[in-house]
Image (tube, rainbow over all chains, first blue to last red; front, side, top):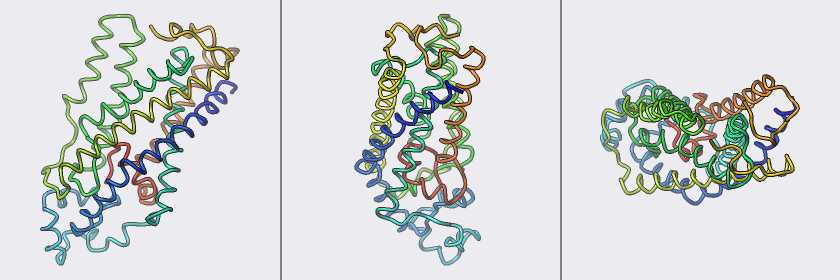
Length: 264
Length: 59
């Protein structure tokens, strides 16, 4: 399992570096916006943070938050009646919450790096930081751009369709976009390239699950700012992740392969 | 399969290569899936800000 060990080692370093950087960027760019949105969420009479939101979502999206607050005396469901039990454990606001966010960033950073390194090794490997930038761009397109078109990054308290269908659409879109990009980049065939484009477009023709109503207390300006912040922080994360993989892998193999090495 | 002259673990056979790379990718998918998509309340709450900040479906 020599190769496996090397892949894990490179992914661990790259994920650690890019994950810590992303957590720092989030602390300044996205988390403050989430906290602002939570003020609206709490004012809207209900903290729908757990999976009970799946069952509550329709009620929540069809009723305006102000309406919700007024009618809170008559809970629509058992989940709404006993939110404290359903919430479960959550990190305390402040440092604990920040620390858990950093941990989530590092752990998933390593996870994304494992996927990136494994897939790029099949295609010949990321030889240097410049190749890494291109692989990072591909990762950004697959994991942020494509799913974000149909399901823009959402703030707490924003109306959304049921969770599971959205997760299924998200994962399917990521898979289709990844295969589509791979067909375009690594198969020197026009029909396969056309198939690749079709795969990238298809999830958006099917369409992402949408809420019944888009009515929300969140100001549109706040949401727009959040979408921009998420997209840009993710872009930097993927570029750094790819570049660090290229640098570390270059040290590992002792030489940097030429750019021609892995591009079709 | 692999035409690059320099690769990680160059000594392993191409079948073993694919299996090891697939294992690594699966491990990565499992890690991201657990932190980002698990319906367990505690996991959701711990990674809440991360899920929103990555544009993962949340709530």
